[in-house]
Image (cartoon, rainbow, N blue to C red):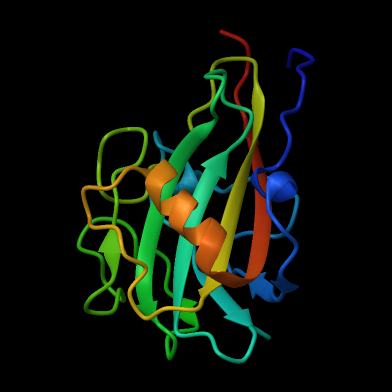
Amino acid sequence: MAEQNRAPLPHDFHPEVHAFSVVSADLEPGAELGDAQVLSGGNISPHLRWEGFPEGTKSFAVTCFDPDAPTGSGFWHWGLFDLPASVTELPAGAGSGKFEGLPAGAVHVRNDYGTKDFGGAAPPPGERHRYVFTVYAVDKEKLGPGADASPAAVGFNLRFHTLGRAQLIGEYGTPAG
């Protein structure tokens, strides 16, 4: 694969907040994404489970962002918020298809594919990208933006309402065309 510059991670420019942990049955930190999380494969959101979030958490948000996309602004693969504070795990596929395992009231915003669900990895041929799955502990039950908000608008709201953050980074690359 071609050598490429790596963009900063999305939280490098945010204030420090309480760090907590997120794990997945589908992804190890720094490991290759499985076919299930690839757009041309299963296109299924991974299982995620989190713990150690700060007291006062009233809801959660989950995102997946590719900082290495050749866009100048990265690529949003997933934006989900207003998960009740009692929810600390999402099964594989909760952000995909029939949204099985997604609690009532959770809100999806469109990803950069233009759909309101999880969109799997699809880097250009010959590139290897990072996929940053982030769980945010939020200080409000309802974050504020509606389902028609952009991922950037959700990120803006999260910037001011995040009590804690956990991230899990996977990678995926494609052979040169």
